[in-house]
Image (cartoon, rainbow, N blue to C red; front, side, top):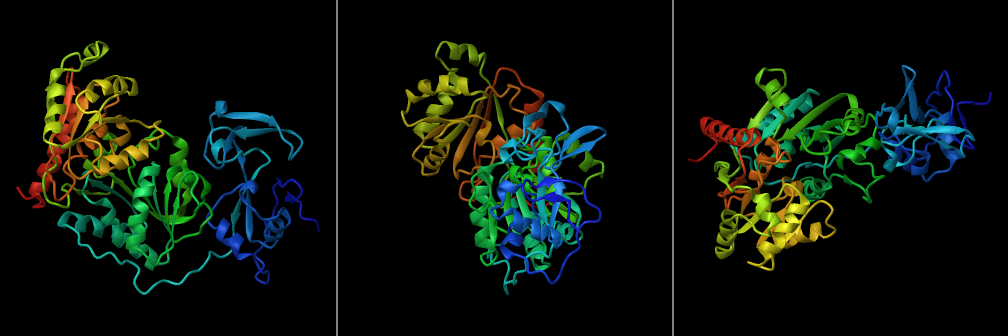
Length: 484
């Protein structure tokens, strides 16, 4: 009897009951298995022929899901979870010769429409041999790190959820090692996800060094590992849109970072990438007020690392009133307090980051400060030379780097001071200011750093940021994790 679930010529999805059963005598393609396990891909993402894909489907090894489903007579994108009508549109479809509905929300991952199936794997997962020694990291953890590490291992073993609330520079990555090892030893598939590509690129070599005999895939826009099956995956949250019930453990780093906090599709992607029974570990130095409240009231399982691994307190921000600095800037001037702060660092050969709330204001300030040192640079998210400038800063070729909030997290310079010009601006939230302050004093060789908030009036965000830093220092002292 002809199988009418799919028309191979155009792969238009039509419901079928019952679905094909797994045929154990069928010799499936192991490359296709590697490609599709835990994924939801479009036909255009797969280099295999339609006939071979259909053959695997009819033998029960491949699943088709509708790309756009209907819920309460409203369309819903199965990949990104979009339900907003304005994110849907119609186009004349050559596949089904009809006017097709498609989702614009996740269009950058390939067009998904009413006649587009999401293709996944239903057969056995790829198997691999475990090395005799999974974790080969030779370092040691501080007391605070060890306590958090034990909690992470417990949550992963019990398929639970846990928030690791760790101060900036606490060494969160090392805290994960034992938990990742426990998961891999139990043949669980692990994903470390983060909203930003920079963090993926920073974490990958560290994880590969710690687990040298484990296949590690790192996924971001343009990554060559896009179709690599691996027990350990490091990915941007955008890339998780291609996964479906893939991971036994997801570790979500920088859970409070943009764009994850504002993009419901990314939150949907993380949820959909988890298996039904799985562990979820959240990492952040700056949980939202809602999450902080849930921690205090016992509604959320959490552990804190209130001290950095080098056992020195977090630098506490200083407030410095600088008057109407934007008015000064319109006259091609900066407040004398800011100029003195900058020239002091230049004279003492102390590198520094100077944060501005907006690109236009930063670029107006740049030539003013370059008058004191022509090597001073500025960087922002759209800067094509962004990575090169960060590398020059690391190589100490730039004495002072002006920046927007793009460098508030995910970068480490060993010996710097930090200042914010216009700390009263709305862009500088509590979490942003805590993260910015956390750029200073991160190295064990240079555990101190000066953090200054130049402002034209204190805000609640400034006060809360300072209070949170003081609170963590107090907790670190109370737990015996800080050297006073």
